[in-house]
Length: 152
Length: 84
Image 1 (spheres, helix red, strand yellow):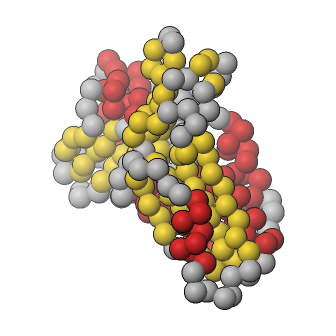
Image 2 (cartoon, each protein chain N blue to C red):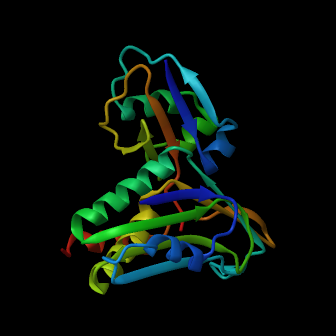
């Protein structure tokens, strides 16, 4: 299990290669990459800055991965989240899950991402023509995380 | 003493990222501590009012109003998270 918080970009191919290297038990790898859009709430976004809570960020993501491992057969997982200044088209977050079968890999990957959105202490501040503003949390993200309580 | 950290919108509005505070004797949980901070008035009363969507952590775990706080704890107040 790997959790990294960094300002630098990441390489999906390199992360997947490192994850599956030398492990013949892995039969499925699911991944998610989050990217900075240039529009939010109808306004043009020129850049954004991500702040986080060092220490708690890593701890909370490790706990989310541990929860996923308790629900699905996960062999390994990697989460990389960038902080600092990001521009539209930049990658923000990477989740990669390796499992024996695709069902576990898909479900655990989506679960980790949904919980990260509502539990991991990151905050986005975006710059628009009207000035800089903190991004408000979305109710739809709570709903996305909530639905996992109903499913097994 | 407890360490209190503030993040994002709260950090900017309160004008500080952290502080050390001697825990008042009658403060034993997070809700009581929040009430002490709100009692400072001004931006504190505004930003930490009960109606505001403020989240908190004690020793880097998400916490609720009835979460106990004690000497030596690291406590954090912040807006709902918006990562990913």
